[in-house]
Each structure stands twice: as structure tokens, then as C-alpha cells.
Length: 419
Ligand code: GLU
Image (cartoon, rainbow, N blue to C red):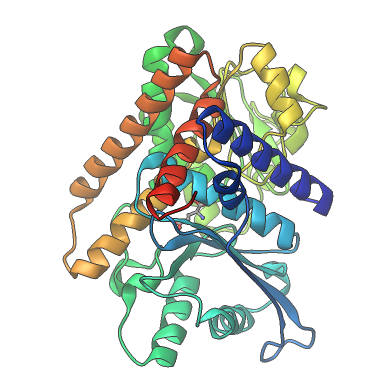
């Protein structure tokens, strides 16, 4: 995403929070507090073995509800505007689902494909050395995001524990099970999204059509969404990776594709032969294909003014963060497309991160079934609250979500003495 689209998204989110805050009767100073980050850490860091410095970020947005929480992204487009935008979104997400955490986000500007595993480990360790004073189990708890994973969380935990000289597994989430991770964390974002979608479909059964789904992005979130939805009886007609998309009206064997993706370096275009009943298209074309449910599960700003009017889906489940521009959102509203907003749809990831943190603090670990039942409860409760308010006040799901999320942060600030 370019600088300007990040800063537009950031301003739009600030604007939506302001409107929600005014509707709720919050003071100007409370609204100003909710719309601006508490701490911004931005350093250019030399990393062992890499000859140019790497920009590293942590934006701690607001901790009125509890310690800061949010992932770390490694991507060439990471910049301060993007990290701020993702941090404000984390604040909304934690507040909306009702977990006792604030919002944060981190990043490092690099393309992981240009580096060896050893260099990536060095970047991860350098990120923690740069940020260690600001993070910790009761301060700020990072997690994976785009291009970071359990292995990177393990290096980060190890580096942090060396610095502080004690065991502190709850300082980071998304860890492998052997280092104190939670069962169910890997698929949590997708599983939470599936629970929100199934609940919303109960309210809007007419929108589900023939249950044909297109998913943009086949990383962790997109691939789990595809396999979980296929298990629920949906037909996955289109998927994409960063190199292109495939579409088949009769449905794709997503379990097989997910397996192949794990074990080979092949792109989706390489995986399918020309004689397969499969159309090879671009990522942009994929969004416009015939389907009932569209799931952006890649990067920001994919549904824009340029394509919103041509999208055929009746439901959009935003598993990516901020995939829809404001103008596109207005067009979709006008056209009656039901958009399940990112800070509800993808909140399952941080919800199970919260469960991981609780288990780390207690040093007592739950079964996969316990995690799943709790995730289901959090997602269904949040979805119900959003739906009910949207009906009561004639709001879109996004507008209702903003109102609920802002209300919880604003009340916490007032209780803390904010006038
Ligand atoms: N990066 C994920 C998100 O955007 C997870 C954050 C977390 O678990 O703290 O929601």
C-alpha cells in the first residue's frame, strides 16, 4: 500500500471514530485521546549481516482497556502511516470483541524474500532489542502478522528473555505450542471469521445464495478460511496468491491446494494445468468474479472506487485489515452488499492471542475444544451486538461496530478521569 492510501485510511478511521464518539456524547478531549496514538517508536536499525539499516516500528495506540496488543509485520510497504492505521484498528478490534487489551502494531520494512532464514532471525532479534523497554507481559504483547509466524515469535521470545533474565512467555503470542502457544491459534483468525459469517447468515439468509466463495490471499488466513468453509459445505470457486488467481465455477479442491502450498514453492498458476477446468486470472480480476461471498484475506485497500460497483458478491467478509476504501464502502452500502467489517471479521486471531496470554499467566493449558468453544462464544456475542445495534439505529455493520468499540474505550477513559 502506498503512503497516501495508508494516510487516507488512517484519516477515515479517525473520522469514523469521531462521528461515533460525538453520537455517544463523548467530550472533545476523550475523542482526541481515542483518535491519537499514545506512543510511536520509529527507529532505523543496523542488523547483523545486513548492510543497510532497516526501519522498525511500534505504535502503541491506546491502553485504557489493558496492555497494548497487536502483531508485527515484515513487508516492503511498511511505513509509519501503515503501522498507525493497523494500530488504531487493533484498538477497535480488542474493544469490540470485549478483551481486556488496548491496541498496538509493529513492523519492519523489508521484503523477507530477499533475506536468508539467518538474516530474518537477526531482524527479529534486533526488533526486540530495539523495543524491549516498551514491551512485556503487562505492557505490550506482540504477535504475528503478514510474513511473521511462530518461528519468528520464538526468536523474539528468546531474545526478550535473555535481556530481562527471566521466563516471560506471555510477552508475545502466536508462539508454537512447545513454547507456550495456544491450541487453535494458527487457524483462529479464519475460524473466528467463519463463526461471524455463519451467525450473520442466520440474520440474512437471502444473501447466501449458492454458498460460492472467492478468497483473495492464500497465506495463513486465506488458506484456513478456504478449508474451514469447504468443511462447512461452502464451494470455494476462486483463490489467489501474490502471483495470481484461479477460478473454477464448479469449485476448487482447496484441501489439496493447501497441502501443496505447504510442501512446494509453486504458485497457484503453476499448480494448475491448462486443461484443468480452471481459469487463470489476475488478483484484480478475481474480485469481480461471480460468487456469493467475497473474502479479502490479503493486504489493505483492495476494494476501491475502481472496482466496488462491479463486485458480484452479496456478502464481503473482511479477513484482511482495512481491505475496503471508504468510497468503496459507500458504494457497497448503496448497492446493498453486506460488509462484515475487519475489526469484527478478523478479531478471532487476537481473541485466541488473549487466550494464549491468559494460559501463559496461569501456566495452565486448555484443550483445543475449550479454546474453540470460547472463541465461538466471543465471536457470536460480538456479532450479535453489532447486528442488534445496526438494526436498532439503522446503521451499517461497520458503523455499529465503530459505535460499540468506541463506547468501551471512551467509558474506560472516563472512569480513569478523562474529562
Ligand atoms: N496480527 C493479527 C491481527 O491483525 C493478530 C494480532 C494479535 O494476535 O495480537 O489481528
